[in-house]
Length: 87
Image 1 (tube, helix red, strand yellow):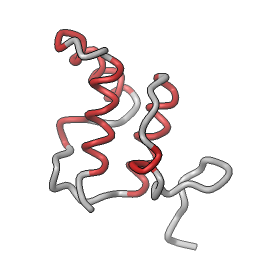
Image 2 (cartoon, one colour; image 1 turned 90 degrees about the horizontal axis):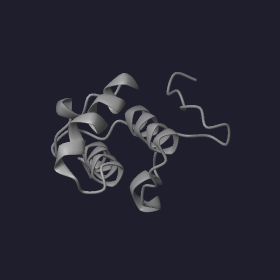
Image 3 (spheres, one colour; image 1 turned 180 degrees about the horizontal axis):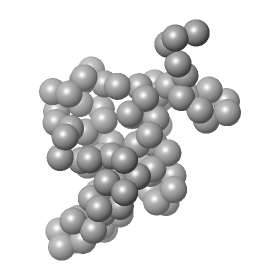
Image 4 (tube, helix red, strand yellow; image 1 turned 30 degrees about the vertical axis):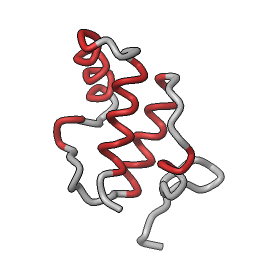
């Protein structure tokens, strides 16, 4: 399934801004400061496990909860560090 990163980003933006459209630009800036540019992701973007992990981590830092099924396949270990495919 593609577009999970975009879905997670959109959920963060809506939940952090409490549905107030005027607060969404501020929420976008917070994500950009954490290295996540919401404008670069769209529904057809492939699911990048490392980026999904970063979005999940950003959501936790911001205080926004994401649905477990959305982040269930993110590339995390028990330590919370991204899993490298170069092992």
